[in-house]
Amino acid sequence: MFQVVLGAYGLHAEKCKMEPFGSGLINHTWKIYHEGLAYILQKVNTAVFQQPEHIAQNIKAIKGYLDQTAPDYLFVAPVKATNGDDFVVISDHFYRIFPFVEDSCTIDFVIHAEQAYQAARQFGEFACRLSDFDVQKLKPTIKDFHNLPLRVAQFKKALAEAGNERISEAKFAIEEIIRYYDIEEQYVQLVGSGALHLRVMHHDTKISNVLLQAETGIGLCVIDLDTVMPGYFISDVGDMLRTYLSRANEEEKDFTKIAIRNDVFAAIYKGYMEKMGQVLTPIEKQFLIYSGKFMIYMQAVRFITDFLNGDIYYKTNYPGQNLVRGLNQIDLLNKYVAKQPEFEEMIREMDRSRETAHPIHGQLRTT
Ligand code: GN1
Ligand code: MG
Figure 1 (cartoon, helix red, strand yellow):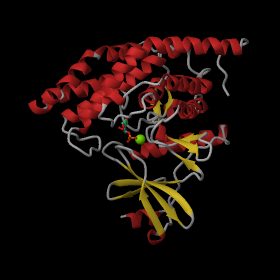
Figure 2 (cartoon, helix red, strand yellow):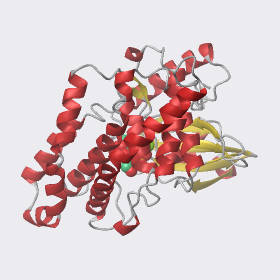
Figure 3 (spheres, rainbow, N blue to C red):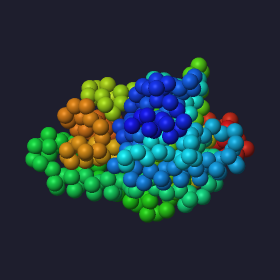
Figure 4 (cartoon, rainbow, N blue to C red):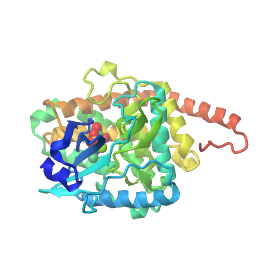
């Protein structure tokens, strides 16, 4: 199989060294070395991305736009196969290859706030550079991906259909998800009111989706563009809050290790607002803290739903892993909610000091 895929790109399998790469739960990824050059090979999960051609079309449209409007911006598009295609189909599986950006690295955990700042700046820059792009030109690559009411409906359906054993194992998680139904209600209200603008969003803003300069740790660009599609800013900011704030990630079984770091919150806010501060509307900005609740809650709902469904969506390595992940996210949510008043005060404070530094606009800098 690899021979055929690599051959389609003019690479000789016997001359390639391959190693598994990254820690994604959906696609399979390898790093390939071939005649002194490095590449990233990805097999797209077509159970999840049912129309991978949408991914290719979106990336092409964005690349065309950025080539015109921001030629200096680093945008890592897939390499074309020798026949000019953006991906290769082999027995129903979709493969594509990216160039590996030299002297870059990725990290799996936010160790210190500076890394969160660099990442938030990159996701902010991506959204900002595309803020005038006609979002209607993009197709959803996963329909209703961050549609919380739909995720909650899927949870309710899974609950109605699950066996007693899984329901009793997940009792506490289920109760917690029900206790937080107001997060969904608020989403419905928010979207219904038109307060959030449809924008080009990345939808998977975990730290490993940012390329950093290996030597300095400075952010280079964002990668893993499969879920780039129209969405709301609460998806991108919310997923950064979800995945950067605690040093322990969603796989951690010892929940006493889940703790929220204020300096990381400040770094995300600063980095994102440096780029998006003048793009987001004042009303949108009011929902920045809500974005964390929205994404943490939705992830808890998705993990618990998958557990109730018998673990059919997320890759798992041990029985009950989706339940652990869901409980982990519920613990994070409780800790996040407790921090909300402090975050509000921090934002007020950061806005005040920025206004003092830039009295003319009373606004955020864009650089
Ligand atoms: C999946 O494949 P990966 O790890 O980048 C998922 C995200 C979840 C994440 C949780 C297409 O992302 O939405 O937040 O797992 N992607 C898809 O770890 O479902
Ligand atoms: Mg991904």
